[in-house]
Length: 194
Image (cartoon, rainbow, N blue to C red; front, side, top):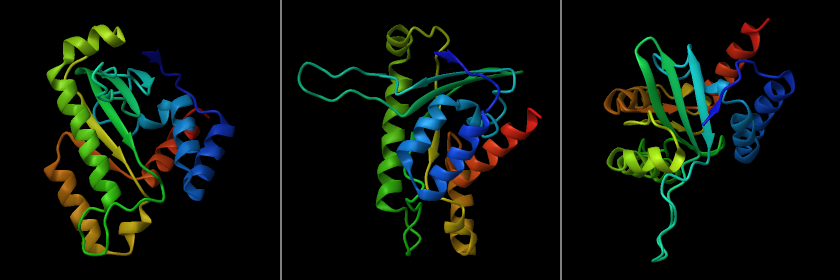
């Protein structure tokens, strides 16, 4: 795990906003991997003392029977007054929708949330193996952060905003975060250094 630097370079701050505006998941992910401090305002209760980050951690290697490995987008550890908490991050596109018109999770959101749940279940069951494989002795039960779409999807629809708030309350171990929220977090991080 790499220590997270506490500042956000201006070029990455500007490029992250552009990547989100243009809906470029690959560029957004690359900038987040270089600057995981952007996640710090999103982490609940932790991260203000220290943060560690690993991009694309192989929590389960591919098996000899051909079964694929498990590689989430990111693994974050945040330290606060209450200790260290772990987060597995699943990223979907800034262009993806959380909901489709009927108010149900979109296919992309459903796929991403299920993938995140599989990573979390595996991580809970195989904590010792992950500690050994990634050489992180303090790893324990992770929470999830699911990043998808933009805030404007629910801004114009009070019913969808209420539904999003409902799901947040029903999934206490998974935060559903829009890229708009990460842009806001990046702005907060960028301006606090001044």
